[in-house]
Length: 199
Image (cartoon, rainbow, N blue to C red; front, top):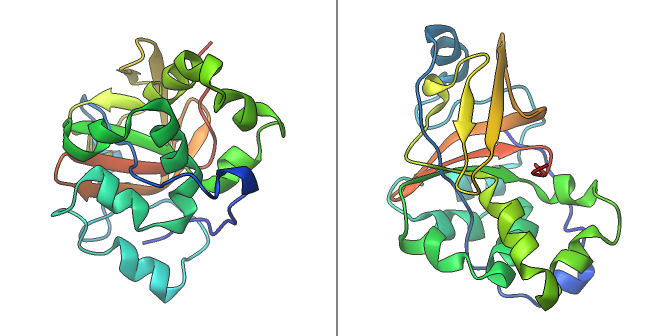
């Protein structure tokens, strides 16, 4: 299991209660993606810096927990879970689904312009925040083995995501999957290194 280690970039979010993470998806995929990405018992990964042992242990044996529980166990997902809470989507990650979630890390959020997250967390921008977060979610369970080069996934937000598979590297709208197939009781999460913005 591998994932980029990043720090929590938004100090003003620290007080927000972390409650969930996303995972939503569907469709089918090539045998090449299956071979390249399904090399661990519970998770398939692309090349990325290793997590330390404590972080790795936090993501082991995830299938019996819901998306929210698995999200809160990973410090690198704290910005995403705070945003879900602010958008009123935490309950869906707890009991909704199944969903496939393409979940950005804290580092991915940190790469946005400095004021972006602050503005999205304002009550008057809640609808826009919901659109962005649901753009990362696809209905159903879409595993790494279901993803194929050139495939389009329709998000809950309504727009499509384009999948690219080149060797062992999988990208979605240009964002690289750094950890795949984190299973939950109500879906699956693929961790990505960029925030996806609907046009």
